[in-house]
Length: 171
Image (cartoon, rainbow, N blue to C red; front, top):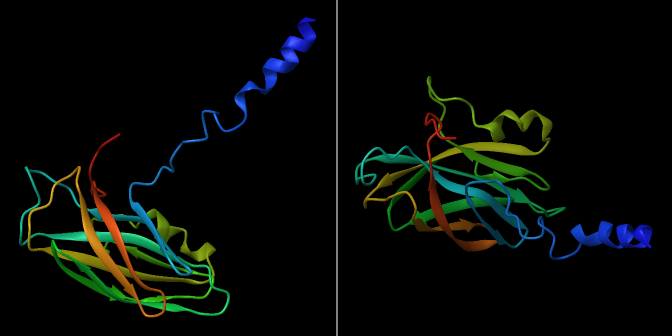
Protein backbone atom coordinates (compact mmCIF):
# COMPACT_ATOMS: atom_id res chain seq x y z
CA UNK A 1 0.00 0.00 0.00
CA UNK A 2 2.81 2.45 0.88
CA UNK A 3 4.45 1.73 -2.47
CA UNK A 4 1.30 2.77 -4.35
CA UNK A 5 1.04 6.00 -2.33
CA UNK A 6 4.71 6.83 -3.01
CA UNK A 7 4.23 6.27 -6.74
CA UNK A 8 1.13 8.47 -6.76
CA UNK A 9 2.92 11.28 -4.90
CA UNK A 10 6.00 11.15 -7.14
CA UNK A 11 4.08 12.73 -10.03
CA UNK A 12 2.77 15.71 -8.07
CA UNK A 13 5.44 18.17 -9.22
CA UNK A 14 4.58 17.95 -12.90
CA UNK A 15 1.85 19.44 -15.02
CA UNK A 16 0.51 22.93 -15.54
CA UNK A 17 0.50 23.85 -11.86
CA UNK A 18 4.18 23.10 -11.35
CA UNK A 19 6.48 25.75 -9.90
CA UNK A 20 8.17 26.32 -13.27
CA UNK A 21 4.97 26.79 -15.29
CA UNK A 22 4.76 30.53 -14.75
CA UNK A 23 8.39 31.56 -14.41
CA UNK A 24 9.54 34.39 -16.67
CA UNK A 25 12.86 34.51 -18.42
CA UNK A 26 15.76 36.15 -16.61
CA UNK A 27 16.24 39.08 -18.99
CA UNK A 28 15.74 42.70 -18.00
CA UNK A 29 14.12 44.00 -21.15
CA UNK A 30 10.84 43.87 -23.03
CA UNK A 31 9.96 41.55 -25.91
CA UNK A 32 7.90 41.96 -29.07
CA UNK A 33 7.33 40.12 -32.33
CA UNK A 34 6.50 41.48 -35.80
CA UNK A 35 6.40 39.21 -38.84
CA UNK A 36 9.46 36.94 -38.82
CA UNK A 37 11.29 39.23 -36.40
CA UNK A 38 11.55 38.82 -32.63
CA UNK A 39 12.83 41.72 -30.50
CA UNK A 40 14.26 40.52 -27.20
CA UNK A 41 15.72 42.15 -24.08
CA UNK A 42 14.77 45.65 -25.28
CA UNK A 43 15.83 48.15 -22.62
CA UNK A 44 17.21 51.60 -21.94
CA UNK A 45 20.57 51.08 -20.26
CA UNK A 46 21.49 53.93 -17.93
CA UNK A 47 22.57 54.59 -14.38
CA UNK A 48 20.09 56.89 -12.64
CA UNK A 49 21.75 58.87 -9.85
CA UNK A 50 18.99 61.40 -9.04
CA UNK A 51 15.20 61.43 -9.16
CA UNK A 52 15.22 61.06 -12.96
CA UNK A 53 17.42 61.07 -16.03
CA UNK A 54 17.05 64.61 -17.37
CA UNK A 55 16.56 66.14 -20.84
CA UNK A 56 19.92 66.65 -22.51
CA UNK A 57 21.32 63.38 -21.14
CA UNK A 58 22.10 60.53 -23.53
CA UNK A 59 21.20 56.93 -22.65
CA UNK A 60 21.87 53.64 -24.44
CA UNK A 61 19.14 51.63 -26.17
CA UNK A 62 20.00 47.93 -26.08
CA UNK A 63 18.20 45.05 -27.82
CA UNK A 64 18.51 41.95 -30.01
CA UNK A 65 16.45 41.28 -33.14
CA UNK A 66 16.31 37.73 -34.50
CA UNK A 67 15.01 36.82 -37.95
CA UNK A 68 13.31 33.44 -38.32
CA UNK A 69 12.81 33.84 -42.09
CA UNK A 70 14.58 31.24 -44.21
CA UNK A 71 14.92 33.52 -47.23
CA UNK A 72 14.32 37.23 -46.48
CA UNK A 73 16.58 39.59 -44.57
CA UNK A 74 15.05 42.72 -43.05
CA UNK A 75 16.32 46.16 -42.21
CA UNK A 76 15.71 48.37 -39.18
CA UNK A 77 14.76 51.63 -40.87
CA UNK A 78 13.72 53.78 -37.89
CA UNK A 79 13.24 53.93 -34.12
CA UNK A 80 10.99 56.61 -32.62
CA UNK A 81 10.07 57.50 -29.04
CA UNK A 82 8.29 60.37 -27.32
CA UNK A 83 11.14 60.76 -24.80
CA UNK A 84 13.88 61.78 -27.22
CA UNK A 85 15.75 61.30 -30.49
CA UNK A 86 17.23 57.89 -31.28
CA UNK A 87 20.57 57.70 -33.11
CA UNK A 88 22.19 54.49 -34.28
CA UNK A 89 25.49 53.42 -35.80
CA UNK A 90 26.60 50.17 -37.37
CA UNK A 91 24.53 47.61 -39.24
CA UNK A 92 20.77 47.94 -39.65
CA UNK A 93 20.36 44.57 -41.41
CA UNK A 94 18.76 41.58 -39.68
CA UNK A 95 20.21 38.66 -41.67
CA UNK A 96 18.27 35.58 -42.80
CA UNK A 97 18.14 33.13 -39.89
CA UNK A 98 20.38 35.46 -37.89
CA UNK A 99 20.44 38.31 -35.41
CA UNK A 100 21.12 42.02 -35.12
CA UNK A 101 22.67 42.79 -31.72
CA UNK A 102 22.34 46.43 -30.67
CA UNK A 103 24.44 47.16 -27.61
CA UNK A 104 25.88 50.17 -25.84
CA UNK A 105 28.55 52.01 -27.83
CA UNK A 106 32.01 50.73 -26.96
CA UNK A 107 34.01 52.94 -24.67
CA UNK A 108 37.34 52.64 -22.89
CA UNK A 109 35.70 51.92 -19.53
CA UNK A 110 32.71 49.90 -20.69
CA UNK A 111 32.82 46.11 -20.79
CA UNK A 112 31.64 44.40 -23.97
CA UNK A 113 28.00 43.37 -23.74
CA UNK A 114 27.58 39.62 -23.01
CA UNK A 115 25.51 39.25 -26.20
CA UNK A 116 28.33 40.75 -28.28
CA UNK A 117 30.90 38.42 -26.67
CA UNK A 118 28.88 35.42 -27.88
CA UNK A 119 28.77 36.64 -31.50
CA UNK A 120 31.60 34.50 -32.91
CA UNK A 121 29.40 31.47 -32.16
CA UNK A 122 26.55 32.90 -34.28
CA UNK A 123 27.23 32.74 -38.01
CA UNK A 124 24.68 35.35 -39.13
CA UNK A 125 25.14 38.16 -36.62
CA UNK A 126 25.37 41.89 -37.24
CA UNK A 127 26.15 44.50 -34.61
CA UNK A 128 25.13 48.09 -34.02
CA UNK A 129 24.86 50.67 -31.24
CA UNK A 130 21.96 53.00 -30.40
CA UNK A 131 21.53 55.97 -28.08
CA UNK A 132 18.63 58.19 -27.07
CA UNK A 133 19.18 61.91 -26.54
CA UNK A 134 16.48 62.70 -23.98
CA UNK A 135 13.88 65.44 -24.55
CA UNK A 136 11.91 64.45 -21.42
CA UNK A 137 12.91 63.15 -17.98
CA UNK A 138 12.71 59.37 -17.49
CA UNK A 139 12.78 57.28 -14.28
CA UNK A 140 13.47 53.72 -13.20
CA UNK A 141 10.35 51.65 -12.65
CA UNK A 142 8.45 53.08 -15.62
CA UNK A 143 8.32 51.98 -19.25
CA UNK A 144 8.55 54.21 -22.32
CA UNK A 145 6.89 53.70 -25.70
CA UNK A 146 9.23 53.04 -28.62
CA UNK A 147 8.24 52.26 -32.22
CA UNK A 148 10.63 50.11 -34.23
CA UNK A 149 10.12 50.27 -38.01
CA UNK A 150 11.41 47.48 -40.24
CA UNK A 151 11.53 47.64 -44.04
CA UNK A 152 9.63 44.37 -44.57
CA UNK A 153 7.98 43.50 -41.24
CA UNK A 154 6.63 47.01 -40.56
CA UNK A 155 6.09 48.74 -37.21
CA UNK A 156 6.10 47.26 -33.73
CA UNK A 157 5.43 49.17 -30.49
CA UNK A 158 7.44 48.20 -27.41
CA UNK A 159 7.08 49.47 -23.81
CA UNK A 160 10.75 49.74 -22.89
CA UNK A 161 12.00 49.66 -19.26
CA UNK A 162 15.18 51.21 -17.86
CA UNK A 163 17.92 48.79 -16.83
CA UNK A 164 20.86 49.76 -14.65
CA UNK A 165 24.02 50.59 -16.54
CA UNK A 166 26.94 48.18 -16.87
CA UNK A 167 28.98 49.89 -14.15
CA UNK A 168 26.37 49.66 -11.41
CA UNK A 169 26.89 47.30 -8.49
CA UNK A 170 23.47 45.77 -7.87
CA UNK A 171 22.97 42.14 -6.91
